[in-house]
Length: 343
Image (tube, rainbow, N blue to C red):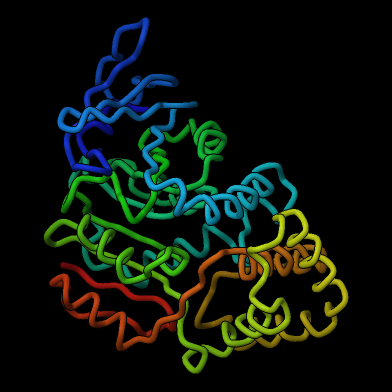
């Protein structure tokens, strides 16, 4: 953990400031890239609650009982990915990560993306960290926080130790430990709908955006708003009977392998149709994916689809109201599920 994080971290319970306790050694000087704390504690100055720093990551999750089921599945997923047992490192869910981030930032966040030095950017629900890494590399004068519920963030932080302006924080998005109205840019892609209450999760991340800052979200659309996701909803709701999260993660993954293997000719035809339809609108796919690549991506996406305990879906009108309630301006919702606006 870089002590620079103390400027933006707040107690997830009472919003108090943290004091840093590094037992048996001096606190490193707060000089940016050279400061690093692998083990220690953060103690709230107000409620005195203590949170550990483990493997360089502050562990600030609260309400363990509520989030444990969600954490279990996603932690298994991200550990598999980090161990190289899913897709290629440059690909996730079948799209090329650098291409995806170039498209995402260029399309939705190109209007005000010259951030003052030291601006804070947040990836709320970073998964295995690739999108946050791309954000940090593209804006080296900003500080990027990658926040997620998964206990695998220590491994992710080690993998990204070469990016000095990238910081990892383990936290529950419903109890964010980030200072209110402190971020020049917040993105939360495919995360809010996996909480117990999507609107409440949206309210939590929206409150972190500073005046003039931008909020970019992707939220599962309604079936009649997106045919691709309507097909995946059928997989979750009908083919897996909505029970994927009730099974051991290893068994759910094995069932996804069997499902994709048995239906691969149909899956392949469906993917080719989608690639053909969306190539111009979504220039985010790898240039020459192999059959193995397509199979691995299909399994990984299927597991991500059927494994979470919660998967809520929301229409454009509903999400538009959420943005308006937080004082955001004109909303860009031209792509199904994506929403972007500045405050």
